[in-house]
Image (cartoon, rainbow, N blue to C red; front, side):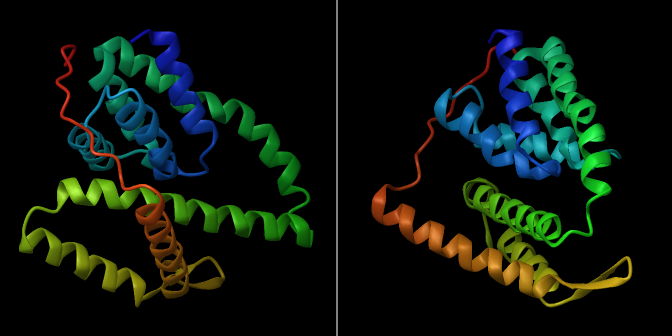
Length: 196
């Protein structure tokens, strides 16, 4: 794959997301479903590699670039990962000065819920590839129950994870039902990447 095209596709994914893993549906759509350059297994490996090291949650983008085009692809992916910061820093200064306005506050809350829904929509195809037996399914269920029924203290506000996860679950179930009746999930044939 052309490195400029790789950079632009990954830049699209990082520019349209507001935290690390919210770019996952865009990356999966571009590289697994449409272009079939990666498999779900390789995308899972990239996410694990990105989450296993200290740093930002979106660091898996660099692993995606490496799986696609080796070291030059990893460099292009790193550039795509850091490029949005040069746009977001001035934008955050502008929005931060107006954060107390109700319209800005509700927009930020809406973006947070949309990001949770995007992450949930990317979970189903990756979980189908990752959950192979009763042990991995039990770990996934226990993790969900723990996150859904505990509260976390963030700053001065108490954020109930239960409500966020239940809303995301309802949205995910709605998305699953709509997609199952309109068109089933695409079956991606394994593709061996020769550059890896």
